[in-house]
Amino acid sequence: MSALAWRLRAWGFASDGVAPWLALFAAALLAATALAVSLGPSAVTLSELLRAILAGPAALPPSIAEVRLPRVACGAAVGAALAVSGAVLQTAVRNPLADPGIVGVTAGAGLAALGAILFFPEEPALVPGFAFAGGLAAIALVMALGLRSGRLAGPLRLVLSGVGVQAICFAGASLLSFLYADRAPAFAAFVVGSLNGLGWADLSRVAPPVLVGLAIALAAVRPLDLLLLDDATAGGLGVAVRRARLLASALAALLAAAAVSVAGLVAFVGLVVPNGVRLLVGPAHARLLPLCALAGATLVLCADAAARTLFAPVELPVGALLALVGGPYFLVVLWRKVA
Image 1 (cartoon, helix red, strand yellow):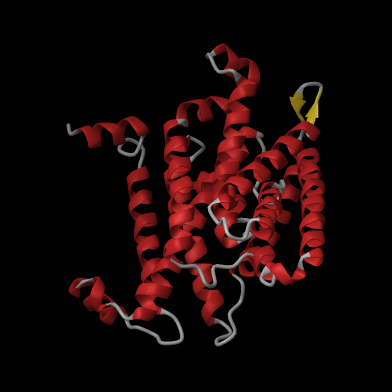
Image 2: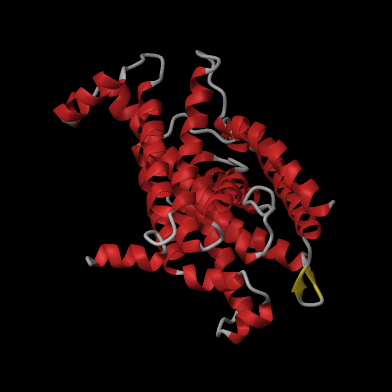
């Protein structure tokens, strides 16, 4: 047996029917990528796109090579990061309602990122670091507010704490945008979430933290699985529960902050995708996280393609369409959990 086959079997891909899901999700991402690249003001058929790719990068039209391809790559990175961030965050706080947007992580990251953009406009490399710090501070505050007798409280308390932190961060961002309106003309798109205008420079900024975060998440599947158990059982199996939850929250903040730094406050991907994938393959993170990354990337690319074409030539922000899907889903899940 090859090393790759052994690793897949150890992770459970070869033993319980997950391989077909992996192939299906990968095929869906490939189809979404082709669709997103081909659609636009100057439509390109799939056959033309395939011929251009086979002929080499130089044969690609500039509208594809310099506009659509980097936008699609950034969208895939944003979707994968938010979906895996949501899955890790739900484990860290042991709450299926957790989402980087709902519990204030993206709002905290967005506030800090906006501050970096306003006060250090000539240092774009600072934006991801500021966003990470803001997202980490937000989730730390939510978890502190959600503690009761030293333990995390129920779903409703955590959600309401997150809503409060989110409101505070949005108020701060609104105040900054009002005071420095001349420096934040694109604030509206940032708040809703948009992939418009992203290029290769944005991809080079978002790709490193996303790849590092995904690699760390995949390497930490065993402690993440143990965090699904009650604290006493997890501690008996050798896990420092509080430290593990804090580190998992930091990892979720890193991934969410990377997405926010280029796409703004895109919400609900981290709620919808992990819950949907969990229904298909179960809670084991070795299976859950790779499929979440693929499904999150696919969802964002499909939403962005729809945002660009439904009301062309007017382009909708991708975050608005995702909110139309995620908002009702959140209400249904919340009603079931607290009813």
